[in-house]
Length: 498
Image (cartoon, one colour):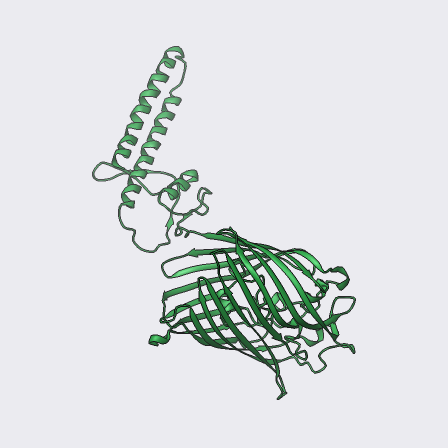
């Protein structure tokens, strides 16, 4: 760098020689020229010398450790040189216009409003942002009208007469964003572009947005919108279908906006860590959040991202064990509790003889108990989970019970082919306005996943379900009576990551 500045010092002399060589003959040819041009050139030379002095002082400052806060303000203003006692000319750390931007970049800082006549604000260098993408396309053929069996959201406007028994379906396009902010802090977000059956349009959802603090394995903390630690599936498989063996999630773990009964997302604080347990390999977790926003035509059944339904918060506590002596084994149990406050007057069919919930009230105490046992190896997969839902209406001693779960088995052959089988059950209480809309889904599925390469996989799956749900009036709103159908469906999915 010293040689660099020596070359820079030589610039004024060379520049002056060039000016004299170029301008000298002009004075012989044009004797009537004034001295203004010479004075202007001298002034420019002085400015160049002052700027070189600024660069030298900046380089000297960069070679010393910075003191004080990481966030500082660099003053801006006109360049001025001032002699020091040793006779050398120096300059203030000042700059304006494009010079301020260049000076800030030379110092390795981001710039804000530099060159606008104001201050150049020093901010820390932005950490690297990594983005991965996941997507899928599906094809479905069934023995029932797909508009009927897929209309599980209350008040959905898809008319049964508008659907058919076969369709192509654009799956979720998921952007998975991560950034290592510092040694112990990291950021994660999932942004989903998803088509809905109600309008066939595409909406954008911020599925997850969380800042995590991970100082050690005994204590980790995340704040923001996370996936609730409910069982195994919801913590291991997120919105990218590339990761899961089957085409769809088990119905008990469907997302809230797809009529899932569980509070899949948590907006609040999540903590977890390890426990000193030797060969048991125990882990603990605890969460507090806004809870699931109770259904209304205005709110739908989504997480309460901004305004909770009430002052009380949801809590979720539990444990799981990963014995180090049995690699791949995990088992655990969790207890979730929250309050639900449905707007009964806005439920479909309210005030008519067809209203499905004559005893509905505006407050329920919900408890969810969920357990899991899984054994996961690179070429083998076994998973069993069950969730029991208990909703107690205010003023009643008779709780409303619902349940759901699945058992899944798969094995890889020749590093490419993974046949799988899954049996699942979801039995809602049709007298419970909080979870009745998910419908009954009980039956087996079988299929095969074929990994075409590292980034693309093809799945073929057959499912057979005993299905029950509300019928729909001409407006599309579910009302009584409850329909009962047997569903046979063949689906294929091309899933990929990029």
